[in-house]
Length: 311
Image (cartoon, rainbow, N blue to C red; front, side, top):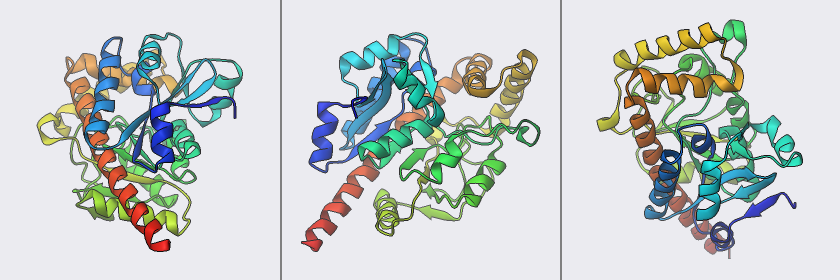
């Protein structure tokens, strides 16, 4: 389709069956101001390359879906204003209206699958918001996992959410969650949540084998790889929880809801913690990018081996 543009680097990697890692663009447009956002985006891409894979930052520029942004496009996107935050429902609107769109976890999964990319690194997924029993505020990221076959590496779900309900939703939807070197679901800023996982694997090769087998069996849907924040950057739950409660109270006071709620809460947390939460956020994203690249490399090796055997 004409709305689809794949960068030369990513296109060559896909043609040659080299490992590719999808990256979202919401963190660029809605995560932090310019030029910090550009610096982090470049750093994440470099981490992917250092670990043997090709980064594919996904965004919508002037109505065109871009799978991989070159240096010029990345800088232009980082400086763009009035960027639409795009989930599944928003993609056609952004395209037909010629808008700039930042892809959420759900939208990145969709567009990555369309491009043939099976591994995606993000910070934390969306989920069931606190108080959802009365607001019904549930991220579109969750139902996407049940229907889009992309493996997502994240530091769990964002800590501002109701983590037990988020896990319950994913379990009901049949979404496998694999703890990478952990038996607990990480709580974004914190390594532990007290919530036990059914599956835990210690190597990226094992995770890649799981992903390959799931695809081989044609089991539709994604895989969530739960990768805890590095220990040296962790914010303990007893320290971050009061800050989260303050941020949520302020959102309630201002009547913030919907797509604006998560960016608002993260900005409030950054202010309340004097920037500590943003440092943690950056470091967990870099860590997820490294692990995702290693999984993509291992997955490409498994696919190559099985293709050779099939011949």
